[in-house]
Amino acid sequence: MSKNITLALGFAQIFKWIVIALFILMAAFMFTSLLAPDFISDYMLEIVKGGGPYNIFKCEDCLDTGMTVHLNSLSTGMLLWIFLMMSLRIGLLYLISLETIQVLKNVRNLNTFYEGNIGSFRKMAVLGLIMAVLGSFSFLSYFNADQNQVFERLNFSPSLGAIGFSLACFVLAEVFKEGKVLQEDKESIL
Amino acid sequence: MSIIVNLDVMLARRKMKLKELSEVVGISETNLSLLKTGKVKGIRWSTLEAICETLDCQPGDIIEYQKNEEL
Image 1 (cartoon, helix red, strand yellow):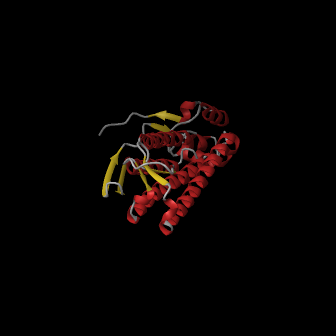
Image 2 (cartoon, each protein chain N blue to C red):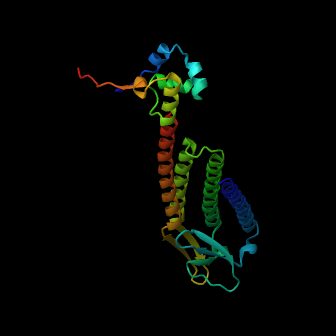
Image 3 (tube, rainbow over the protein chains, first blue to last red):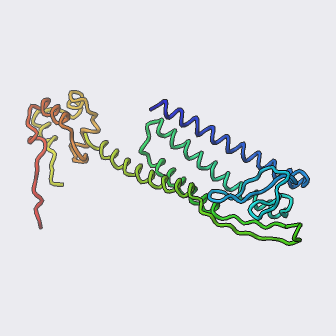
């Protein structure tokens, strides 16, 4: 039990630091792209279906298809919007990792069916729901140089992973709530 | 509640204090006090056995069922 908890805590800590590193990388990329627009000329932005909303990759010979567009065809406002959306998602992942670490620490300290854990699972479920909503919609406005026209695209594709995660957290909150009642019953028997 | 705990009566009959009982039975005085005042949800067979052995009595001497009288 202790070994498993230590392992899980280790994974959760690694996940937390990966999320932090991801945020730093993304912030560095975005600031570089705002300060030096030539830097992003080879980079493409893709609208990800089901769990997105955005994916950035390097491709020199790719063409704009509507679902994938060159980053330099986006306005500064659009770039900032994408940065904001991605930051929100990373922020939510960071909060989820913090709650996970808190729950695992409580379990390690033998406070498994503790009020704080029920609250943590509820928080994670709500954060998962917010992430599902954020991941389901993606808005993109870009300039197509060939057609000399600005295109606007609003994509909806439900983020099933985040919805499933949220549901699992709600179920776990209820299971832990029941566990707390049973533990209180057990403790009140002499 | 219709189950009455008569632990205080038995303690008085045996001229024993709660502290002494707690030392012999191995249950804290606080928990025995909760049992005495009927604030616990249940009692284990082993606890009941230890109390009965110490007080030299039957389980019925400690716990008793009283029908709720309707007004």
